Image 1: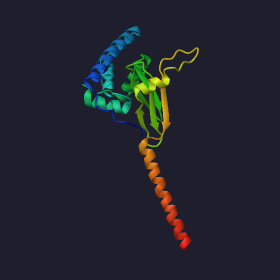
Image 2 (image 1 turned 90 degrees about the vertical axis):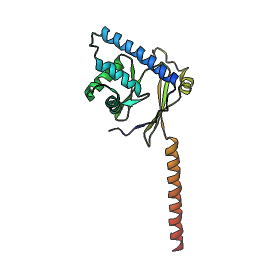
Image 3 (image 1 turned 30 degrees about the vertical axis):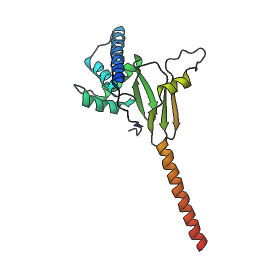
Length: 187
């Protein structure tokens, strides 16, 4: 099981909830069109998975989505159904699949803004960089002869908590070494 932790999501404002609701309605329509175009069945499970994925409000794993389904869906679906449905959503352009460590992470594609994430290599926390910062950093990035669909950046390093923890441990180690040296000098 992947040990990566997702940073807590702050409470959403009424405006953010309304935007998310509109985005989900649009995604539902796009899913319907995609399934009709591919002659696929429009099952209630697929629409419910899309709705519940919208409740994740950020990056989520299949395990996290299963928990949300247990809490918020009117029925249960298997892990295989979730995997297959997420692949369908990726093909339909509704979801971004992040391949991080050993588990795939997913995120609803609610807008075309560039996205950036910090990933702590010590505690595995994933934090989304504010959209304005990501947009500013990536707005002028263009690759010749390449049609860009998504602009995603993963920044690996140490989060503030892990930096502080490491500094504290280094101070303790330095103090211990100094104490050991003083003991040896007294002998």
